[in-house]
Amino acid sequence: MKTNVVYKYEIPGNDYQMIRLPKDAKPFSVINQNDKIVMYVLRDYYTKSVDLIDRVFITAGTGQTIKDNIIAIIGTFTIENLVFHLMEVELTTDLSYKLMEK
Image (cartoon, rainbow, N blue to C red; front, side):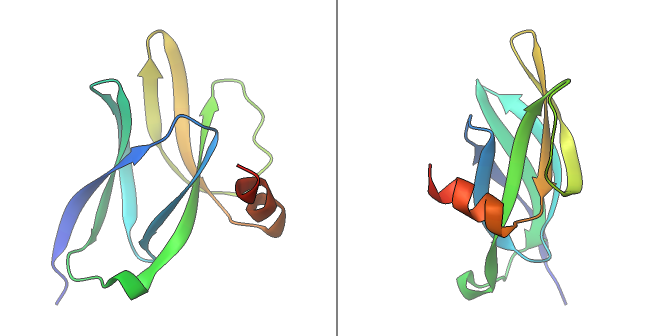
């Protein structure tokens, strides 16, 4: 039987970010908390570190073009008077190279 728990992950301010999560973890919300962007994720409490995979998220501003394959829309948040959207995107070879350059 699974024991689900909500975890919080800080999202850096860059466009793309890779976060190690369980494959079956379910990101469900993003907010600006104390001037830090955090994503809330429902995951199994007993997932072992060997069961984690790299998952990629993009922060995009309203009106910004997104060329990646979007897996899920996590939510919308604001920084001052600007509106941003957090999405999980498919990890492709091209995107892997882009993330390694950072």
